[in-house]
Amino acid sequence: MYPGLAELPLYLVICMFLIACVSALFILLKNHRVGTVVGVCMVLGGGVSNLTERLIYGHVVDWIPVGEVFVTNVADAIIVIGILICVYYFYDSSRTINRAHRTRK
Image 1 (cartoon, rainbow, N blue to C red):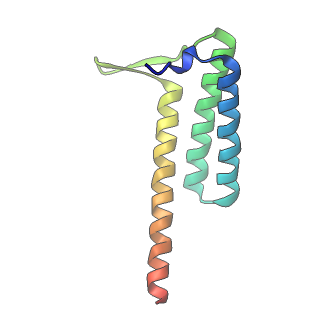
Image 2: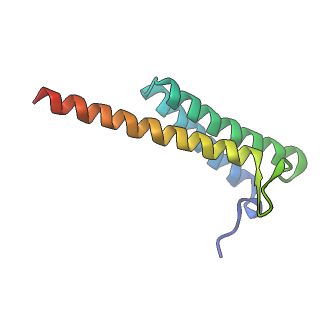
Protein backbone atom coordinates (compact mmCIF):
# COMPACT_ATOMS: atom_id res chain seq x y z
CA MET A 1 0.00 0.00 0.00
CA TYR A 2 1.14 3.54 -0.72
CA PRO A 3 2.59 5.23 2.38
CA GLY A 4 0.85 8.35 3.64
CA LEU A 5 2.60 11.68 3.79
CA ALA A 6 3.24 11.13 7.50
CA GLU A 7 5.52 8.17 6.73
CA LEU A 8 7.64 10.07 4.20
CA PRO A 9 10.96 11.54 5.35
CA LEU A 10 10.78 15.26 6.13
CA TYR A 11 13.36 16.19 3.48
CA LEU A 12 11.16 14.55 0.83
CA VAL A 13 8.10 16.46 2.04
CA ILE A 14 10.07 19.73 1.91
CA CYS A 15 11.31 18.94 -1.63
CA MET A 16 7.75 18.23 -2.78
CA PHE A 17 6.62 21.49 -1.22
CA LEU A 18 9.39 23.47 -2.93
CA ILE A 19 8.49 21.93 -6.30
CA ALA A 20 4.87 22.93 -5.71
CA CYS A 21 5.95 26.49 -4.84
CA VAL A 22 8.04 26.86 -8.00
CA SER A 23 5.19 25.48 -10.10
CA ALA A 24 2.75 27.88 -8.46
CA LEU A 25 5.10 30.78 -9.11
CA PHE A 26 5.14 29.96 -12.82
CA ILE A 27 1.34 29.81 -12.83
CA LEU A 28 1.11 33.18 -11.08
CA LEU A 29 3.59 34.79 -13.45
CA LYS A 30 1.74 33.44 -16.50
CA ASN A 31 -1.82 34.07 -15.35
CA HIS A 32 -2.78 37.28 -13.56
CA ARG A 33 -6.49 36.52 -13.03
CA VAL A 34 -7.55 37.21 -9.47
CA GLY A 35 -9.32 33.88 -9.02
CA THR A 36 -6.27 31.91 -10.08
CA VAL A 37 -4.01 33.92 -7.79
CA VAL A 38 -6.39 33.38 -4.86
CA GLY A 39 -6.59 29.64 -5.57
CA VAL A 40 -2.83 29.21 -5.83
CA CYS A 41 -2.30 31.25 -2.65
CA MET A 42 -4.81 29.05 -0.81
CA VAL A 43 -2.96 25.92 -1.95
CA LEU A 44 0.39 27.37 -0.89
CA GLY A 45 -1.02 28.62 2.42
CA GLY A 46 -2.43 25.21 3.25
CA GLY A 47 0.88 23.61 2.34
CA VAL A 48 2.83 26.05 4.49
CA SER A 49 0.44 25.38 7.38
CA ASN A 50 0.86 21.61 7.13
CA LEU A 51 4.63 21.88 6.75
CA THR A 52 4.91 24.26 9.71
CA GLU A 53 2.88 21.96 11.94
CA ARG A 54 5.01 19.02 10.84
CA LEU A 55 8.21 20.88 11.67
CA ILE A 56 6.97 22.17 15.04
CA TYR A 57 4.83 19.30 16.36
CA GLY A 58 5.95 16.38 14.22
CA HIS A 59 2.39 15.88 12.93
CA VAL A 60 -0.62 17.88 11.76
CA VAL A 61 -2.77 19.13 14.65
CA ASP A 62 -5.70 21.16 13.27
CA TRP A 63 -8.31 18.41 12.74
CA ILE A 64 -12.02 19.28 12.63
CA PRO A 65 -15.03 16.95 12.44
CA VAL A 66 -17.36 17.41 9.49
CA GLY A 67 -20.63 15.80 10.45
CA GLU A 68 -20.40 12.50 12.27
CA VAL A 69 -18.57 10.52 9.61
CA PHE A 70 -15.76 12.67 8.25
CA VAL A 71 -12.78 14.33 9.95
CA THR A 72 -10.53 16.68 7.97
CA ASN A 73 -7.56 18.91 8.44
CA VAL A 74 -8.22 22.64 8.09
CA ALA A 75 -5.20 23.19 5.85
CA ASP A 76 -6.18 20.25 3.63
CA ALA A 77 -9.68 21.70 3.26
CA ILE A 78 -8.13 25.05 2.22
CA ILE A 79 -5.90 23.23 -0.29
CA VAL A 80 -8.88 21.42 -1.85
CA ILE A 81 -10.89 24.65 -2.08
CA GLY A 82 -7.90 26.40 -3.69
CA ILE A 83 -7.52 23.59 -6.23
CA LEU A 84 -11.23 23.78 -7.08
CA ILE A 85 -10.95 27.55 -7.59
CA CYS A 86 -7.92 27.08 -9.87
CA VAL A 87 -9.65 24.37 -11.90
CA TYR A 88 -12.70 26.59 -12.33
CA TYR A 89 -10.65 29.57 -13.52
CA PHE A 90 -8.48 27.46 -15.83
CA TYR A 91 -11.62 25.92 -17.33
CA ASP A 92 -13.26 29.34 -17.60
CA SER A 93 -10.20 30.88 -19.30
CA SER A 94 -10.02 28.01 -21.83
CA ARG A 95 -13.70 28.54 -22.65
CA THR A 96 -13.05 32.25 -23.16
CA ILE A 97 -10.11 31.52 -25.47
CA ASN A 98 -12.17 29.01 -27.47
CA ARG A 99 -15.06 31.47 -27.75
CA ALA A 100 -12.70 34.22 -28.98
CA HIS A 101 -11.13 31.84 -31.49
CA ARG A 102 -14.57 30.87 -32.89
CA THR A 103 -15.64 34.50 -33.33
CA ARG A 104 -12.52 35.29 -35.39
CA LYS A 105 -13.30 32.67 -38.04
